[in-house]
Image (cartoon, rainbow, N blue to C red; front, side):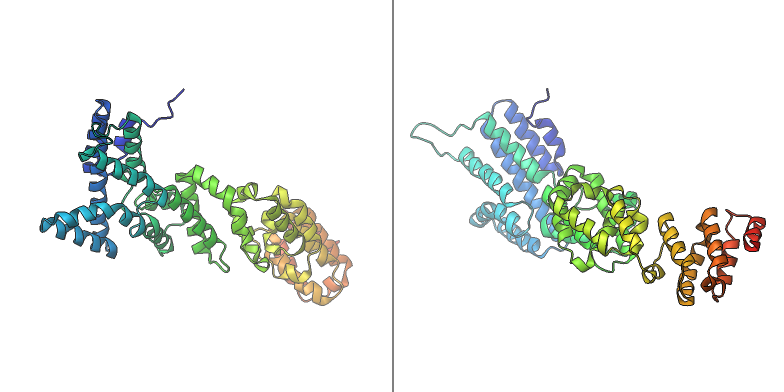
Length: 412
């Protein structure tokens, strides 16, 4: 059975910066030799160097707060101002937490304990008149792990700044609509080696953006590529967000705009499994009563909602069918449209439906064509309509019936 303890040598390899890595390697060597006080001191030195390097990188990238902090540090160093240097060291964790957002509040607590224990190890303070502070192996080990897991392994951008960078990337005109290409972009972004909180928040924002009304196809494709990239990089976090957040995210959509939820389900049908019973019931009721007919191509193939979709299709109106836009018309919708056509009770109805049939005439089966021709033969509202000749010419191009058969149907 594998040990639940983190391997110290693997923690060293996780470090991003070479200087921090060398100090942590020294801390691990001290730990292995039993010099636990030295291990804790070296760990804090690694953290200090890493924070200063991160501040320097952020400053070069244009972060105003980082510029302020770097100036204060360099001024104290150049002037040999010990008091200001000590003040900078005392406050650096608070700066990382509150101003640069490099660590969370919980991570701050553990790193502050490291700072406190480093002071107890490095200064000649006594726990009693004759006993100096002797940290345990477990304490030294947890500090090494905290330093790497919370700070040393990450790039210098986290929190709000990292989120802004990621969202700006996705909003760019040049962000790809292909997941593989999107992964290439993200591998050079703060999303690589990101904290769980950043990944979680980024995914939630992407999902909310995907539910925006009147989203154009290009932007939707970029968001889908970004979401699938997050799934590829952080599958466990992705599933956890869906389990705990997707129902509330869908629930935030106004009732009159619920069609957008079905656009999301079209591309991510597995999200249905993560919805709570109340949200599933709401979406099912919407399908029964109000769903846009354009979703039928998806719903009729989505097993959990197929029955409700068939019920809704049975109640569809000619006006709804006239506004429908399918790339390929589902067979059930075609049958319903043909049924309306052959039972037309007026020239107006037949002339409304004929253009729909013309758009999809090459998709119809032989039996469907025969049904249309039967209506042409028996219904004077079709036979005498001005749109029938155009429809017949379109049906003649259908490869499922040859010219001789088609002429025979007309002769009948």
